[in-house]
Length: 231
Ligand code: DER
Image 1: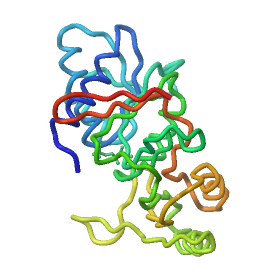
Image 2: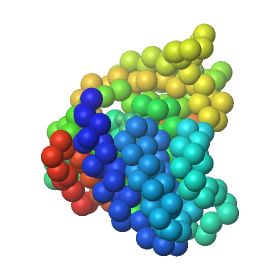
Image 3: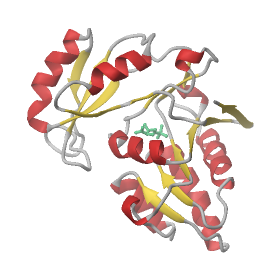
């Protein structure tokens, strides 16, 4: 969903905040890819930054853009993380402010590590990601041989788990970390924080795609402008 122009505006707005000396966490997905393109152009014009990627794909895009790539244990901080989302709650109720669903790209484990570590975490989206209440499936990265038992636990929480199948490969999607992904449908999620803590406690779950209270701002690109939400 969302037009390329909207994604481009959101990505470029996030990239504009990056100054010399910044260590930037690079998220995964097509909207963050616009930010990476913009950062590549700024680096070509002399901007000096280091990037910590969140996936094989974001590292690949950074290298192709000649952005200096480093890694988490080689830096003493991440100043700014720029990342996309599959859904963003867009209403000022305190309980859900800045609540996201991520994981559409099966990269949410490393994304959450980098996004949560960063001093400032900015989400870049097009309008199709905005919602009053989270209701998309929540991706879970699970240890491969745990996917059945985790599925049982998800059902106990009234969720419906689906093992994410790959395209271009027989069998399920395998993450950069060698794990599988269960997409878990819970319907409308009225208390994302509560569900997040229940999912975190399931043995075999490596990471879930509920990002609650982590984002500092969301940049919403539109076809003719940009809206900013600061949390
Ligand atoms: O996997 C993720 O969480 C990504 O941020 C992703 O789902 C958003 O991707 P998009 O910017 O291509 O919609």
